[in-house]
Image 1 (cartoon, rainbow over the protein chains, first blue to last red):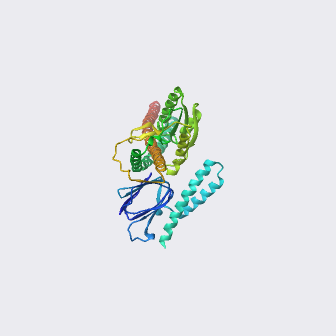
Image 2: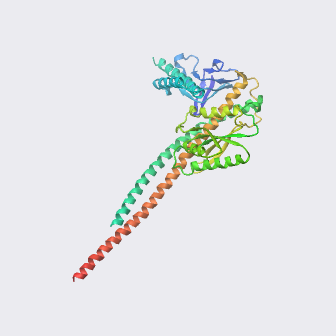
Image 3: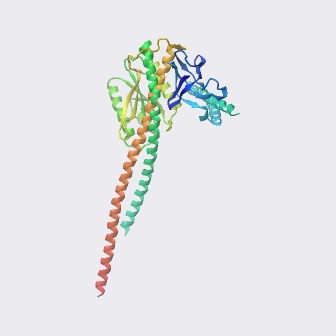
Length: 141
Length: 288
């Protein structure tokens, strides 16, 4: 087992011993299993998935939507520092969908570089949230 | 009788005011508790970021990183945290006084001042004062800020610092020392600083992805972010706490006024009765 700690500005979001964690980093998605070698990496916005036990099926995984952050693996502990982390259960799909559309609208209407960048970051953020909310729905079936 | 009627009216109006201030006091108290909890939650994050930076500094020259370079200060940026509303005691006045003092000192030293204002009160002041170049005002920060709300403040500051348009960034906020003590404080954000402790170097055989520079960038920004975040939340907690105290004082004061007015009212009423009695007995005496 490997210890997984997910820390956001709003507090500790997850802290437990788990079997596997899938993370989005700047170089692509990585999977972290117990006894991973020491690693420090930069996370990007995306979905963090946690498999609690080796035999858990994919639909039993926990999912978090994260924005960029820092990832550290040391002494069989994975620490992820992120601005925000929302568990799938905390996101309503309808709201995420609305935010996603609004962000796209803002991007289309952006007049200067600054507001365009702002809109783009909102688009990225809401896209991830929407994705996580969608994952949750699939599991209910 | 006219006197007693006006007194009665005044008592009524003060009583209404007391009800309002009492309500505002209770609202502020509950908001303060929430803000305090929120501020505490960010602590773990800061500890992790610091410890990571300290360990990074052991294996790489952090001092050469663009965000850590200190250079002679010619342009200074203040992030000024105030509230949107008033009626919070000396909350805004304290920050504005601190800002004024800083700006005067900078002017003497030939340093140009730029400001980013958080909250309407600070923005109003900075706009009015000569010698402060207000580059942005954020008046839409909610009671429960999310990381997204402070993103653009940070990005602006970091960009200006990287482009050498400013050489120093400080945040002026109200430190929440306890429920009773809050202090306007200045915290230096950029150039970023770290404590060089001789911790055992556990990063020697660590892999960095994509590279150590990118990671360092990321960690430095996280650290800044958490500092701004903490300052913002402490300010929020302070604001509510000071508003609560101000409203409590107002409520107490209203109670005192009501007591005084009631006493005056009773005296006036008693005087009227006495006078009436005197008139009746006077009349009865005259009839004899």
